[in-house]
Amino acid sequence: MHPRLLKTFLAVARNRNFTRAAEEVNLAQSSVSDQIQSLETELGTKLFIRLRSGLELTAAGEALRPYAEETLMMADEARAAVEAASGRTAGTVTIGALETIASVKLPQWLAAFQSNHPAINLRLKVAGSSDLLRKVEDGEIDVAFCFDKDGLDERLAKRMISAEPLVLIAPPGQESLSKGGDLAALASTSFVATEPGCIYRHLFDKAFDEAGIAAPKLAAEVGSIGTIARLVAAGTGMSLVPRLAVADALDRGEINELPWPSPTRTASLVMIWRRRRVQPPALKLLLAAESNGFAPAKPTGARPRHAVSSPL
Image 1 (cartoon, one colour):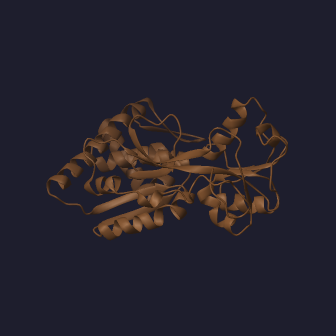
Image 2: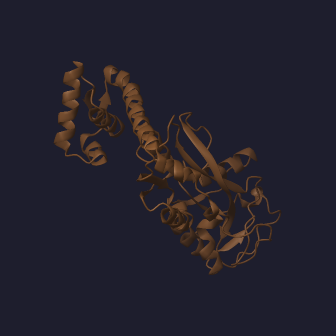
Image 3: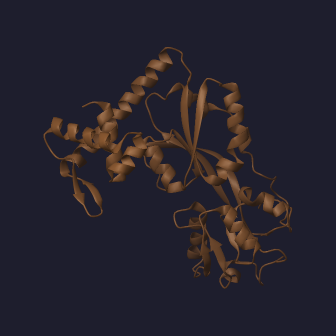
């Protein structure tokens, strides 16, 4: 079984669709169909069945899947071992990141890395947390920058980069919470929240659940932190977000920062990558690089105030 066929097989298994799989592996749809047919002919059995909901793996396809993943992993490690033995450090590293991290944290750090390692090409893909983890697991990206969540696959490794402060943002002019300044005081307030699956939403829901308080009414669920900040500025509601994502809006006085009344006041920013016996030299250099560019957006310790303020 040629690795090229196994790579296409896994793409079809992930996407459950020839067209989307073709886009992933940069082939024509007809080529993807031909490769799957060739693999089925070689193995003497069907690997997929067609359903209304899309393609599904047969029992034979399910049996092949872990072996295909292991075969491609071994091929990657063999290539990496040869590169390391020959002293080559050139190559391409594909990085995935949340939109906030990609725009605020990565630019200077990656520019410095590329300046030090001009032979290494960097690719950057922006996606949500769940999609980033899937892409790392499937080998679509080499390393992901996202916020830490429980239940990481044992095939993945992670390293904490920084603890990013979480802040409660409110419309301009709202200088304090209701009496008490606790979660109960927020229960009757409208909120703009990120979508389920996002770490900020998880921490938001978790705080009220652990306090035994019904979560506040959601005025909207939004995938973009920038859009959330604009909705809060317009008076739609409050929101819990990482301070680094809204620091500029706070400095301009478009929104106000209030203390988040929960024990969990930071989110851990992490690098996540696949465990390998041998890492590609280019990726190994990136993993070992200094992370000075990942300091918090503002120094900690000062009390929050309107517009320009320090994180909790």
